[in-house]
Image (cartoon, rainbow, N blue to C red):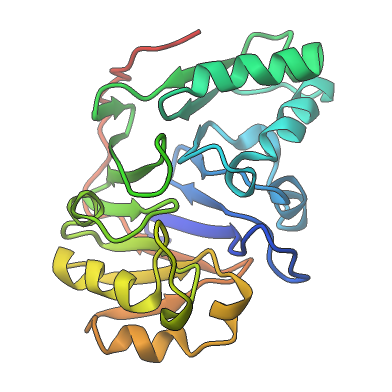
Length: 269
């Protein structure tokens, strides 16, 4: 089988409970790494449902601090602490204020979120372009909360972009420029759109303006799930569109070998 980048959607819902959708979390797999984009409530259970070993996760990148995007970091760290299995190094990255956020968790939960093996490291995003072994990350602030960011991963000759939670903005269009896949939130149907979130028409306009090849919509509130999101989005974007669900998977073949550029980052605690 040819080498590929794989997206595995673990959580595609919102903070409002849904029997078939957990909160936001996406697994990005490369031939060498397993990267979580957000770790909202329900992620730990979804990893178990999908047979994904928590010890195989090498990076976690957090877009902002709302519980539906970060709440399962607490049980994830607790699980690692109580595991007897040999663990790989885990690096957790978050936006401005992330190190204070972690100190708050340690104040609240004490040693239960502290790993005695010292193989978990925390970093705060500072430089907008970061080179890691095998991939490049570019991030930018987006319109949601003060700390909210979106991500652009460049790896294997491919580009995969993630909005996190965001409204329509030029920063997000730049992150999505010529992306092979853009994963954009679609919280509400157009008629219920709110500031700081995307609707199907807004997400589709971003994808069209950015020249995206494939658009994947996720992060659905109940009104979005009751709407014909794809038909609306198709009016504004002429590329391929997918509506994600928990367990949805998609892959894109790697065009060029990944290069171990070395991690070029600061902010380790």
